[in-house]
Structures are given as C-alpha cells and as structure tokens.
Length: 283
Image (tube, rainbow, N blue to C red; front, side, top):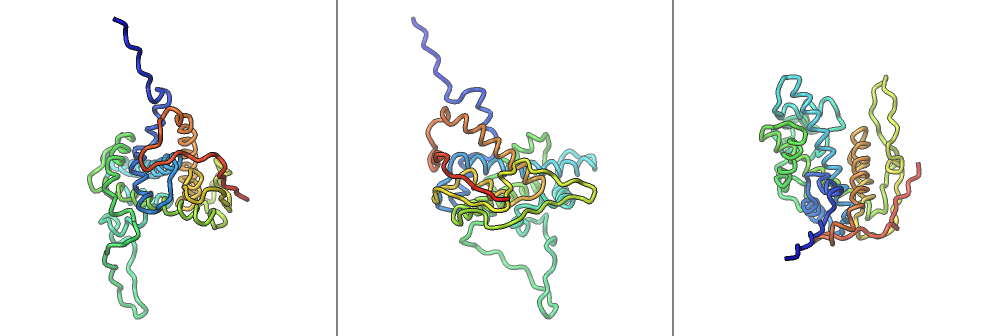
C-alpha cells in the first residue's frame, strides 16, 4: 500500500508566530471597526491596530506589575493601575472608560457652575456613537492572555479595567483612522514629548511615522496600515508612541511575508491594496 503524501501546511512553521502577534484577534478588531465606520479595513491595518492595542496594554500591565512588586504582591489590583498612571501620564489612555469604572471614581474632579453649585455627573445614556464601553467584555480573553504572557495575575476588577481600556482605546483608534482617510491625512502640526530636565530628548525610531503633517493619497474607501500608524500618532505620545509604531511596523512587515500562504481574506476582510497609497510627511 502506497503511503499518502503529507499534506502541506497552510502556514509555514517559521511564519506561524506572526499570527500570534497580538491576543486581540483579527475578527474582534474588524468588529470594532465595523461599529465605527463602513469603510473597508485591510489585513495589514487589522494587524497593525491589534499590535498597537497590545503594546498599550502591555505597557500598562508592566507598570502596574512594578507597583505591585513594591508591596511584595504578585496579583494586580486596581490600585496598581492608578499608581501606574500616576507615575507615567503616557499610560492615561482610553479616557472614556474612566467614567464607567469604580476604580477611577472621583478622579475627574468636582465641577461647579457659575454660582459655585456642584454640577452632578451626567447620567449615562445610550449613545448612537460607539464608545467602546458596551463591547468591553469582548476583550477579556485577550487581556487574560496578556497577563499570562507577562507572568502575572489580576483580580477581576483589574481585568475589567484593562478590558475596558482596551475596548475604548481601539474604538478611538478606529475612529481616528477613519478620519485620516476622510480628511486625507492628519490635520495637525507638531508633536509633544515629555522628558525630565536631565534627560536627553529621544530620537525618533520611525522618522517617517512622526512627521508634523501627513498627506494621504489613494483609495478613500479603505483603511490601510499607514492610516493606523497615523491614528496612533494622534492617540499616543512619548515613549509609548515610539514603541507602538515600531512594533506595529514590525508586525505588519512580518505579516506581509505570510500573505501568500495565509489563504484568501476572511469574511468581512479585504486583501491589502497595491502599494500605491503612501503618507507623505513634511518635517
């Protein structure tokens, strides 16, 4: 009896790790984009958005882990999240989540009207504009995987906060990327970098991703990788922005090597357009 030839693998072993670049799966990322915009989202844009979100959550977890270690704890609690943000303002992302989390209650300050009367907080209401809060529970699996990857555990309340921050951040990133496509680029000038008086100014790791003005050309119906990178410069600043851009660029560069063996686009996903769309930046 003749032995049957082995079936070829769909994805080569040396490239399989690329598919695990982020615990936030492409289907979840595409679902967030569908809630925000009817535009198409390319494969590389999906992976870039997942990578940026992973970088943000990893930075927060690492900072919270350091705070817990100072108290000889191995399990993260919400107080560690507050401590991490207090020590590094760059980690204050997903701000819309703060109004929905008991952890951040009272941190936004008390508002007074013109007569000095305290203004009560606004009641939560259903909004037609997605805020990322309603879909926060979808990110729980990814958050737990990130915690495992960093060899740390967290109480349920901490998982909930990381979950909500990830959801709100990715929603805002999708909204900004869609705006970049609609407006043909990032309509802003300058960048902000926080350093101490005795610390030298950091040099950009990706100069082409940090230009003062971004002008976009090409397909006005598809969000591409460069649109995600441009949106990242709007959402983040400082060292975390540098790291997010570098890691997203590396993730999508590696992803491009697997396109031919990864099969056709999944449902709701389109292949990347030819490389005719660029973002020109003038320093």
